[in-house]
Image (cartoon, rainbow, N blue to C red; front, side, top):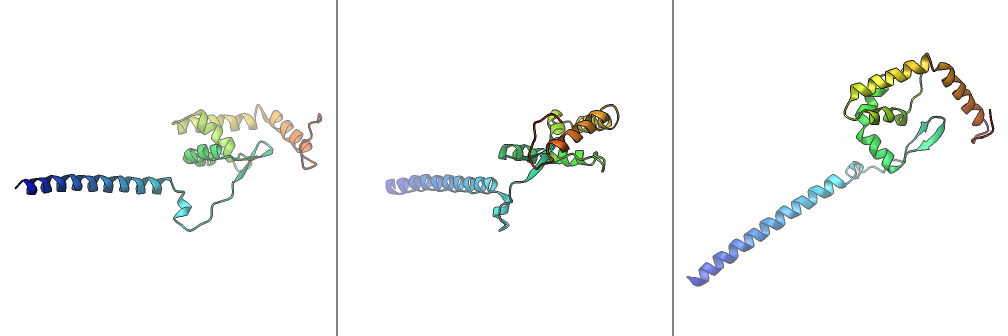
Length: 148
């Protein structure tokens, strides 16, 4: 009877250990799946780092910026619908409005509409002059800091 009691006690401890190890193993597998990039499961190759335009100078998106952009992609895509066809605003430009109004898509859209209105009315001469100056400064393929 003593041996049966010890065997039963050992069996219960062994079962608890195996169950705990199983749970930990499952947690590790799920964590690894969540941490892996999605293209790892699709057999694809990682995408090249994207470039977008910040003002007139090419701006290479770094990992931190790309992460912030990914976290705000819904709002940025929503804001893109507000931009008129004749106006060029990149993802980084729109991200600025998304970050200025966290958790307030409507506020970000309102601010963007106000900025677009200003660029087309009151600030039109400033925007046009700046665009011409940037075109002259970048005419030779680089950036010329001389007064234009």
